[in-house]
Length: 288
Image (cartoon, rainbow, N blue to C red; front, side):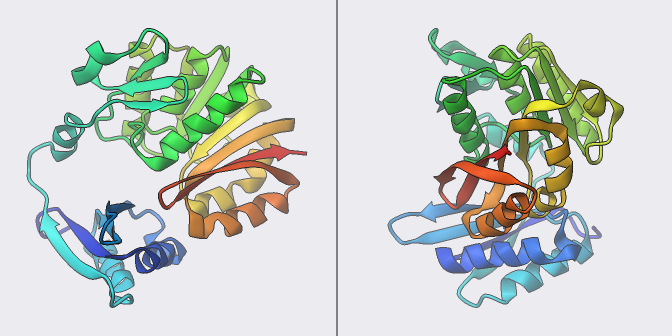
């Protein structure tokens, strides 16, 4: 970008914020755009979108998508040169999701003795455990663990590696994670070492990497990414799973649930469970 880095902020009613997020997801030019949506003020019913453009073209596309919803008040703020992400994460509290307790270095003394404690340092990767999609995946996995264990686990779009590490720490002997972002893969590997977790993370686009194929087929696949990639990967995820295997999908808004479900049902999956947190949905599906 020619200007200093900045974020675009949109505030307004939930319906408009969710519709704007869906419009961003539906725009092919914004497929790689980074944004979040959350409830900012419950009493006033205000929801907020934070978008972080990486080019002038992406910024223009994001602002155009948001401008189509007049009820949203759109602004932009300059990002400081400091490591704003690390600074923000330093103030985040630990997260409890079922049997899992996710914490950073600043909270290492708070981990209870009765939980599966995962120290996750985010750096520039997604997946601290605070986002509704990550919590949804961990809650879904925690519930599945009450009935069975999973010998082979694949984590698609691993981010910090939290989901793959959770699987390795709860008895899965084979765990492979992938991400299209090299920085995320590096951070996931570092987190695996921190947690003494036998999970392998590789830089890969799609599921054709030799490490992914060599360790399959899988009993469980995590895919906490975005709605469009989830739809695109429905057939590869099916082929990566054993018959009867389970997929935990997230990274999608409730408004995108139908679209993702339709793609997987057309490939022979059945819905086992759904979890909703704020505007986000997590789906547990079984390959028939």
